[in-house]
Image 1 (cartoon, rainbow, N blue to C red):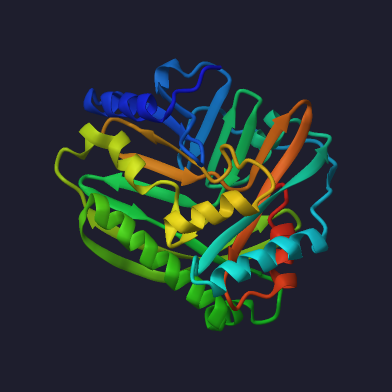
Image 2 (spheres, rainbow, N blue to C red):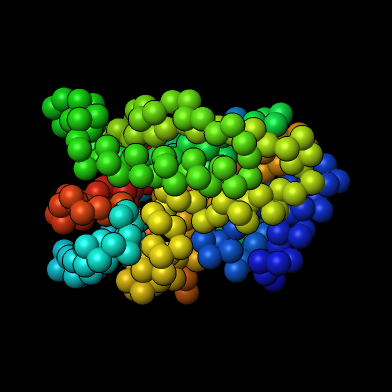
Length: 323
């Protein structure tokens, strides 16, 4: 298909919002590819779920499946990790979300994985990629915008897991940095910025594991006619701080020099505007099909206090099918 470029894409989103047309939008991580189309014109090869909003029927999985992964080696990961630490010690970044591409195999195709995956936010796009994300990006109700940065993960089956993640100094520092970044981002588009909930914990299913994820809720007040400039608003606050790091600009530059692949739509944003409110998610837990092969993209945040092996294990833990 023909994707819209950054300028045309955000102009189209602005126009759809001005006309109060319900639409779906998808932004690549670098915003060079944008999809924006009215909900009633999506066709039968684009499916979404944003909590209770969906455009496909629920189906229960009735058969078994196979799943295997061939992740980057620990030595390869360590090389990139150590480069990030050099950048941190040089003051060029304080927190950076380092990600990798992992070849996977499954007896299920993308459509089946999407259909059976259990997640709050899901997207299937034309057999090209899917995501089953646990992370909201922004939601807008009336004139209030809210964002929910997610930073901090632990295996729920570890003894005293909740207390461990709550008291972990590295995880706390990482979360504080992302909350501060997202406060600043919301301040670009709104006023009266508030952290309404700080470091609350949710449990998510990760294949045969359960993970605890730490999130916060930040809100701001938007201008009354925010519907008229949805594209401009999205452009101002993307890419999401939770999947880049801080400070955002220099960290994005370091990511582009360090990661050995193109993120594409992974860590981009998708959402819907229903004519009155807007709901969106960060495209993590992401599988892409290229030349008949499947690739899973995953990663985690690196700070000066990060442990190489623990971060590598987190990258692996995030490669799963949530059935």
